[in-house]
Each structure stands twice: as structure tokens, then as C-alpha cells.
Length: 127
Image 1: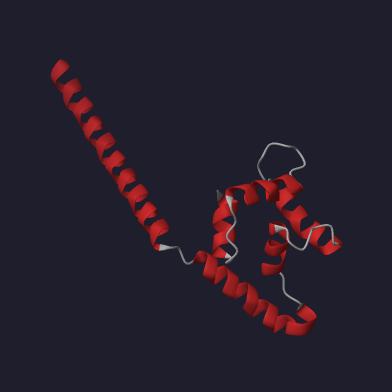
Image 2: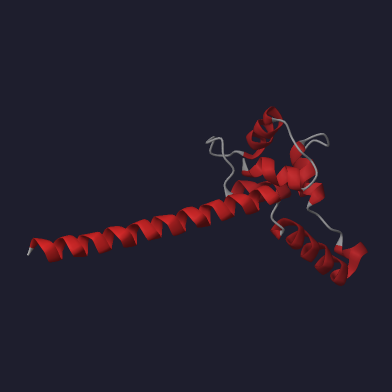
């Protein structure tokens, strides 16, 4: 799911089968998931020319690369800062989910406090 969301945010959405094929290309431990090491392997394989041009992984590598010789260090800095900014801007859906999670946490904390207060009153009346 994380790979799907990342590809959508980068502007290269993939089908479910496309995502499975992408994972298969670098899944060294055959667990059906990408570890951080396997994620980095995508860029290693792209640099070594081991990925097909029509591969979703090649699209990912191309969307995440910058030519420092052409752009210069300042251009690379701006590129990565823009990427970070784009990725850190949460979508409306993500913001709603976060708000719901925060609300649930607050409700859970209130419930725990009420239970603790009830236990204290119960202890006071039972002695």
C-alpha cells in the first residue's frame, strides 16, 4: 500500500499487478514486501541498467533522480527540498485520518481517566 501511495504521489500510479511485479523485481527474501535494503536496490539496479525501460521501478528511479552536473548543487538542493515539501503536504484524506486518530486517542484517554476516578471512588466506599 505504501508503494502504491508513493507511486501515486510521484505521478506514476500503478495497477495492483504492476505493483506486485515491481516488488517481485527486487524482493530478495521473497516475503512479498519491500525492506529498506530492497528499496535501495531499486536505485542500484537502475544505475546499473538492470531495470527494463517499461518497468514501474525504472519510472520510480527516474522520478527520484537529479543530474547534479546539469542542475548544480543548488538545483539539487532545491529539487530535494521541493520533493520533501510535496511529500510532507498531507492530502485531505490523510489529514482527516490523522484528526480521527487524534480524536480517538483523546477519547481513550478520557475514558481511562474516568475509569481511574471510578476506581478511586469505589475504593473509598468499599473501605
